[in-house]
Length: 295
Image (cartoon, one colour):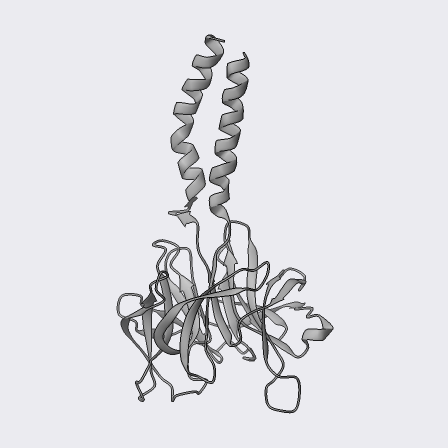
């Protein structure tokens, strides 16, 4: 029986070790004054941002992982392209380098707001993006962006979007929390507002993404206005509860952070560690039975 106890302890250690695979990893892009964007990893507990490398694109204010493939996508203007054509591209998370998928059809002059302010993948692999009051679907094969039929009717102070684990598309602008109809593009306020700490006012969310495993919404928060009439711009990463507007653990982070994406752990709807454990269960059960019988 003692050997069986040791075996059970080993199984417990195995389960605990594989569950650590679900630890959140957050990537972000930051740039200053519409210039070249750098990819970072960001520790949500401390705010520390570790640079990976330049993306090769300017004004990358929208990134997200495809939950079906684990590929990181972004939107921005190719560095040096003075036409301002906004491209969809994939990002190498080891080097930071971007590879063009194709033109979105959106034209924005250098440094203007005519670029995607955020993007988010539905669990079926459909990519949505937002510019001002217009929501788009973006073809991840060609890059072409197609507007939804109607405007959101929401203001665009920060203009962040993210799908939650149940595929509700949330939008935060300033402190107003809304949902967006994925067929029409129309936004509806939830009646909840983000309760920013007094020392972060004025503030806005300029990028956000859910950790689908935990259900936590991580947000990039900008404090200040940078126009000389108020506090200078400062960037934070925080967690926001859209059900009540609570904001927690705001941590100062890299200047110019304008997009973030949580590395997904889902593979075809099943977390990696659960898949690993499921495959191992028959063998574990057999070993337990054999040990108990011979104890």
